[in-house]
Length: 248
Image (cartoon, rainbow, N blue to C red; front, side, top):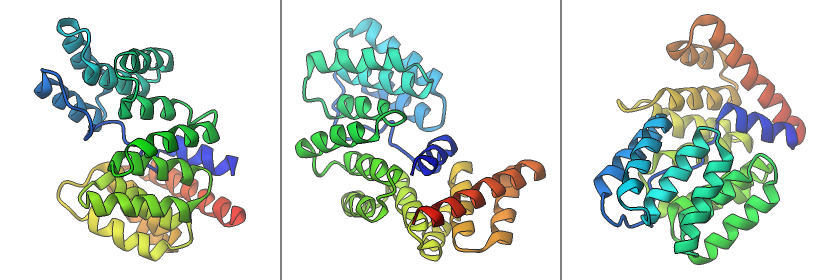
């Protein structure tokens, strides 16, 4: 179980939602914070943090900006600063959904049970928020509880069918649950779209390995990686597959 947790966290195979706060209403500078969220989605956490801090410079009580800053700080690995940002947001809005989610995400490496407890507490207040559902599914997957996780992903997709991160997580959860071919089909559709990111193609390769289509997976990996890195990635995913089979 611990080995699977570490592999998933380090590889980034599953996607915890770090932005796109559907339940947050921006108190001014909404366009700026939207730009910050997009930057974070694209992997530019430094840019996202700079934008959020710019908003806070003129609006020091903007809770959405505090949460956005916390998300960016967490993405940059500054857990202490992220903790402070989320705490400040909750001092103003004690039930803020996404600040509480942020606190839960900070627990993922060290205490999965406590992270799950945090996410379930948020779920009681926001049971139809697709981000909450996705994140709860994620923490269950990290504990090897794939069938439970899939329930939450599927609920999230009923509410918001087009959220790619949730669809990818659902597919990878299926792959880890021994349903590699179904996962490969789902991710193949996503990966074939013109807007598919490098990460999605790598996720597709994971599903291909889990489905037993090793040569196809190697070809997919070579689309984005040099040959040596592609082989190293393939071997890592193959080890994950063997580890997961042992755990199950």
